[in-house]
Length: 574
Image 1 (cartoon, helix red, strand yellow):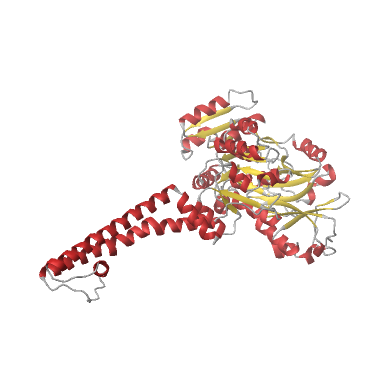
Image 2 (image 1 turned 90 degrees about the vertical axis):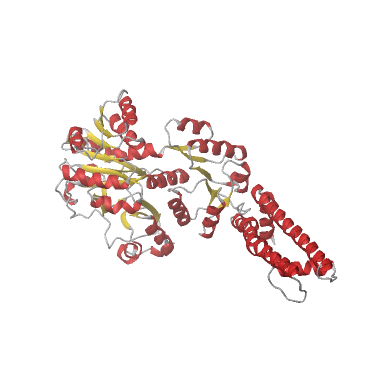
């Protein structure tokens, strides 16, 4: 009953639905009036032509039966005038009853009723006992992965969707969703915002500002995490009440810039775990090139531990006999002092004095160029849009120690790329928002300079394998970075960006694995995760993880893999 009452309430409250019902009522009134007029005509012909007398009930009965083409034959005309009138009534009935009425019923009643069912299907409010949940304000490319992560970790959430059709589809897909407008305080009251652990404002900068102000009306203390699409919007969002503002496009550019080889060799921090720092070390141009992991002696000389080796988009476990190639990138972990000690060893070695080439001068490309300039690295940007070229030239007027040169034109032009320095560039960043273009440019740049390091962004994860086959060394997407950044903000943890499709997961050894060796645990075979290190309760870090390593309760497992693999681990071992 409550479901039908909700539908009826929508029919009578919705302005368009009310107009439809009025139109249908007018047609039904016209139809009844037509039947009355035809009944009067029946009586006149019967009285003056047929010399018969019938009641008004019989007249209306004959009119209805004749218009519906049933024609029982119990009341008939015997004259030509009567029969012509019967033909006219039948044709009128076919048009008004059999053609127009079904169409009007479907258009003005049945279709609005179906729409009301869709509106009533999606919930309008959350469970009255829901607490410590995350409120999501938009179904963007980041949210599906974020929902999967929250389901794995047991974090409750609710998605606000203003479109009834999409809200209904999401509800049928078992997504926790409520129907409501993101700029309506009643929606946040229905979402119990005052009891939420956080609100994610992930719409446009203007809408996010409105969301923050609306949330602050009801929940002054609930944390708000907002995504900023423009650098100038960061301050506005913070003044509107946002607790954390994530300029993801700028962050994406900086993360990509952090993966290039240029200037002198150094460690590139990618995150931290407790008091340990995770960093990447490109092997190219250093004495580490050509050595095995065992022969690098990094642990004995600096204290850092190698937990993985990137090789053209694939992260492998750091086995002692793994040989490091020119394209290898080490993933290390250690204290800040230990990483600094390794940096001192690497500083004398130059990876290339030529400018880094950035293809694509949009928001991401500009952010990458700014990050490189701040490190004193010269940058050549290839951009075909004239207005963007002018904006980029103004970037080079700042106080950065590096210099920026803009080359206007299409990156597929060999002469332009040659003028931009593709033959001597140590690294190239592909920052266009078209995956097909980035795949083409990766293959093209690899052919022109087989030894350079290629770092690229992608939009769709399905293209990751293709762009790696094209020759890209490192790939990162907006959605992946957004997922990790938002999750770090929600859980108050440091951001760790391993690479597209991969993440570093930490989990205390569950009771089901206590006392088992790594081989007997089946973590790799059953889940696909790779255990790269084990942190003991006494803070000792075991990086040479072997099949015979015994797992004990209280240890922390550091594992690399995908969200799906981690979800499988949680389901199997708890």
